[in-house]
Each structure stands twice: as C-alpha cells, then as structure tokens.
Length: 106
Image (tube, rainbow, N blue to C red; front, side, top):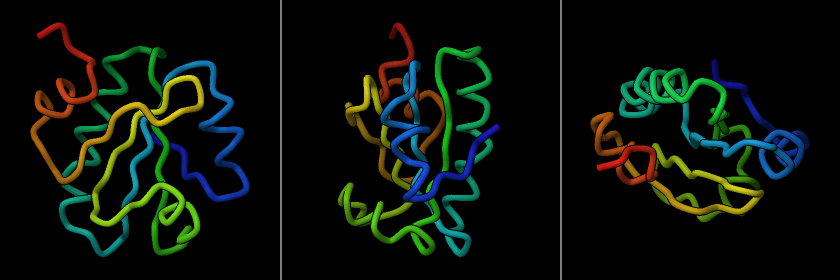
C-alpha cells in the first residue's frame, strides 16, 4: 500500500530508502491519477518488497512538485539510491509503465 509523503518525510521515506521508491505525484481532482493508482499498487505488490510506493499530493506539497519539475500529472518517478532515475508521465497501461521503469525483462 502507498504511503502519503510530505515535504518533511520525503527524505526519510524516499531519499534514504534501502529499496527503490516509486513516487506518484498526483492530485485528488485528477481522473487519470485515480485510474493509474491501482496499476501502481499492483506493480509494487508484484515486486514483493523490492520496490516501495509513495504518493505526493501536489496540491498539498507544492514545494516537492516544484523541486522535481512536475508539470503534468500523474507523474511517477523511480528513485534509486536516493536519486531520480526514470519517470513516467500520464496514465499508461501496466506493461508500458513497467517497461519504462525497467521493471520487466522485455
């Protein structure tokens, strides 16, 4: 299950994580954000502890959205070793998200 992250918990939850962290930048009013949420939950569930999912509400955490240049939502950024490594913008099918994030062999 995704953890809601705020500016004051971002460093601990994401940057200092021992496992890669998928950060979902979203907003309550965003339809595509709600559409992609169960897909992200499924991806993380299938990764069985090898990947963590957190959510950043851009309306509540504008500073984080600006810090990572979020111009469109949903935007998902995969952090590895505390650094953003790859991002996916927009609601996409599960396979496309996994391929972009490098989570599949193909």
